[in-house]
Length: 413
Image 1 (cartoon, rainbow, N blue to C red):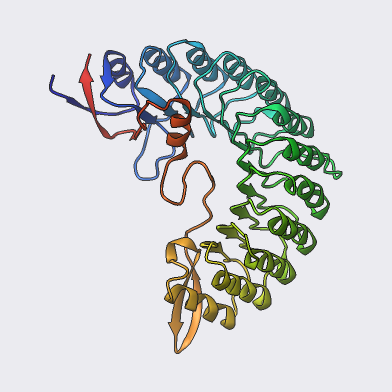
Image 2 (cartoon, rainbow, N blue to C red; image 1 turned 180 degrees about the vertical axis):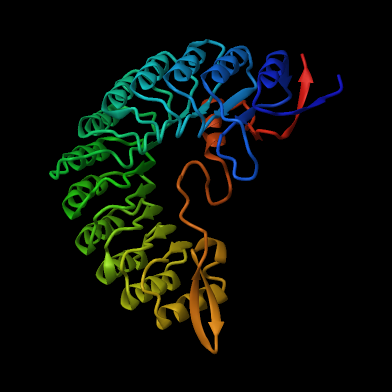
């Protein structure tokens, strides 16, 4: 039968048509409410109810992106009902920055205790607080299929952060965890001790986001004790903490003795020149596998930045470096200009661009930044959700993304 084209819109008409039609391939519905190019209608709980009913018998929709909408605990309940259906085909569910709170997290956690298909859950920006996070941590005792969990900016407390560390000691399915920006009022950094112990025991975690944790050099000392004995972690996000040169010296020791980390985000810390030199020495050493490094806004001056530029010349593995927000004086501008001119540092792999004024070289800021996820978008452009899907379903095809208000081929039932 001849394929029909559907103009996707966020309306009940779309939901009705979705119920009676099937896609000719697996797709991800992208219904985010923050489109910058055009005005979109944000989804509410009633829309989610209609959508979840339509998806119950639809095996072609394997991803649902409903970020930045007006979904509350009620809408989360509708999606939880969908996840409990045996016919649910969802592999990824992105609910970031809605209005889901503790009760919504509770029903989602209960649904995931019996769900064996969902691989990725994004809840960042929803104020589920400590109790909601505890429900999700308890879920990890039972669920053994979830691979990505995002809980940044969810107002987690010390109790729930430690609970996740404890659960990760025995959970062997999660590959990526983001608990950035919890609300931690203790200065003892107990969470760092528990995460260090977890890293010693966990052999499946690949990506760990610990941004905005208020971590100091003391916390870094505890964390590196576990990193020295961990062989699975590839991406470590430590942005927006209070790490100084002393903490970076310990991290550099990890890079020398246990070279497994490939991506490190240290932006918005305070490592200064000495910290940059420690990193440069570690990167320049034999066996280093570090590919991407961000040290933006770290009060680094000429000595430290020149050492990083030299490290790039010595080690061909380091391909991405981000330095904006530091003191970019003329020798630094000249050194990085030479790296870019020679082709050693392509413009899309850094956040600065060189330009000349009256014979003097300056650096301007570019909008590029370190990728936020190791698994989600690799350097070759591969979507990690595709890779995760193939890990779970080797015979399935990679689901393309489907934007709202996009022409998508559909076939009548």
